[in-house]
Length: 165
Image 1 (cartoon, rainbow, N blue to C red):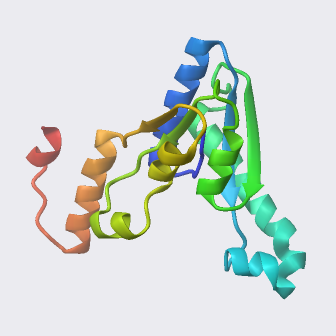
Image 2: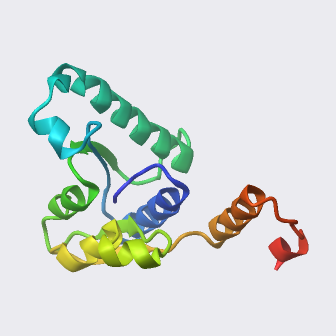
């Protein structure tokens, strides 16, 4: 299961826990992280001493996401959290090594122009993972919340009846 901490990631975490329960399997929650500057910072940079801080921040982000998703009681299945330095695409495809694994990722929302130029993490995993991939669509409430945020950003009038349906 790929974890980012966003709302879509939390929805996917719940789905991954359900799948683990159905299969009698454990849940591996993987968070990919990179130092600022991405690959360049990891190759040639004087920021090498700062890497433990970024790793600790990533561990905190994973811990917060798991507590937010499942509370202190956990998901009800064996849970392993893992932080890995690298791009989410490469890290998740590498984490799902066996054909018996199930890789669960949040599908995110569609990005027309950007999606054509730089495919999403879920699309990359669907194309390259050696195991089945479950791309979990965003929660419909998340789409409604994004609509409200867009309207607020543009100072548009909001009709509460639109949210009820």
